[in-house]
Image (tube, rainbow, N blue to C red; front, side, top):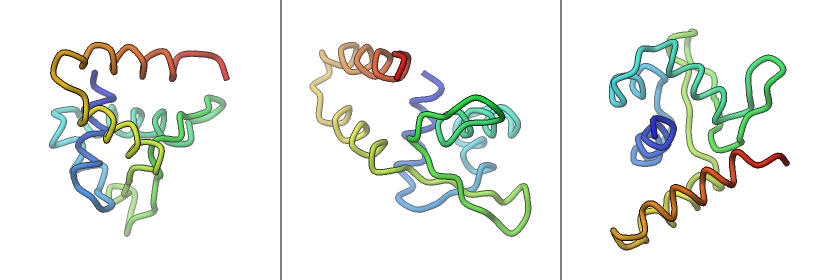
Length: 102
């Protein structure tokens, strides 16, 4: 659920936002946010990412920015369009999509 919240915060911004801004809006610390963004973007170290976020450079390391990719925005739009009774179905579909081996 934390990953979804992160994606929704970034999507709602509609423009690149700083990692610090995402951390503040999600209630996570900066380091946890940076690790989560890496996992949702292009990965970290030997781990590949999900490609849902695009990391952008900032003026300095604490000013790094991030934005949603088109794929993430498609998922956000699908989630937003679902009636309340279908939230679990969408969450389940997203979990299957992003935990299945490629």
